Image 1 (cartoon, rainbow over the protein chains, first blue to last red):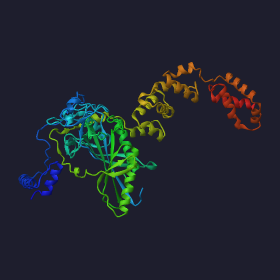
Image 2 (image 1 turned 135 degrees about the vertical axis):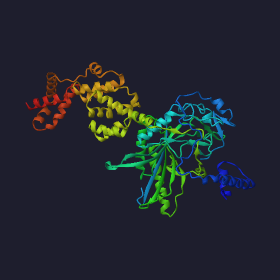
Image 3 (image 1 turned 60 degrees about the vertical axis):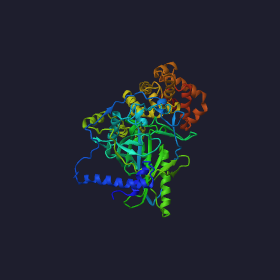
Length: 95
Length: 478
């Protein structure tokens, strides 16, 4: 096995996914197959090869430090399920 | 401080940059605006919005790197740091992980008895800030995303500090540098310079580090000291009782002076960093680095040394004057006009700083520019007025903005050096105090001070004290 049930549960928790027992079983099997497939890459000798961060051969895409108009409070909050005094409202965060 | 354990401290400092716009969009970074008024699809994290990097942020990062003796990476990349929190709209923070822009730097800090200690800087990376959570609403927590996407530098030190005082020294120096460089406003209360401290203990002689606690939420130098000292005591007590330090994040509470465990965030430490596909690599070539290096201002430490050598100032003066860039510029402008560095230093550190403090004015807005002050110092130097009268003139200049000569003329403060006029005053004083004159002549020579005082008073401070002294002695002797 490339991946354990516990690891699937852990990743699901980090991703805020609520999975039931059958889903966890199914995903453990599927993710195991996926990782097994990708493992083929380990056969390549990658010593001395710089890891690829980007597929496009581009660098230094810059913006000048010039202020552009913002979209305005009303539009910013337009999709918010809840708002108050110009702020997004979220469930109480306990620190 | 405990003598049984060695204290090990590493610091992470978040430096908010003074760019006009955010790191990945053109929204303004102005502080204190109406909540969420400075937002756009990029910093709101709306689907499909693409970040574009603000070149000025790289420029500032290179400045910070060069000023802290770092190596500037020829190629660096942005990474996503994934975690869920309501102040982070995208569900990830754009930061740098494997290839930060600066690495392997150091700062030398002062210790007792003039010793210097080198503190390593592991790395400096660029990242975006999160939004602000407000907990005073009635229905839940409120989120203001004006701060989201504001550019930060995170400066990570090596665990090279071994006391709260060393940590403060390091922080003060780093603070001075970023303000000097003009890349941070240095405002601790507004959160422009924030510090997290990693603190651990180990028995003396042990090579491996103890388990550390990360202290967050410390927004003044004084609190850094309090938080570290409290944490050292807490961990020492724990270890003494045979307990173990748990690796955790602890919040400093300024009201109680305690640190307390911040539960519920343990899981979030699994950040699953990966290169951000929306942002291409940043490539910095030698010519860019040299261009930034050439434009660097003289740094406080170098300036301090120069003041000691070139101007022959005491170490204390040099430290005070070099601490703030605007103050140093004021001082140097003054010395350029009045070539007596120690006199200039005395006036800047004395009258100027006092008046600024009393009137709550910043040196940049000083109503008495160097040229005016130099005009006053010239009049002391050529004996037109005494040092004491000069302080009076200084006050008047501060109020009116007039030249020293104008005030001296208008208020008739010109020092009397004319021996005839002074002799007349002395004669009056001696005549009025026959008993003291007899006592003086009988051997109570200390009375000279009394006579000088009387004459100066009669002249309303305008008589030249040197001349008064000399003439008095002659007359009393005769």
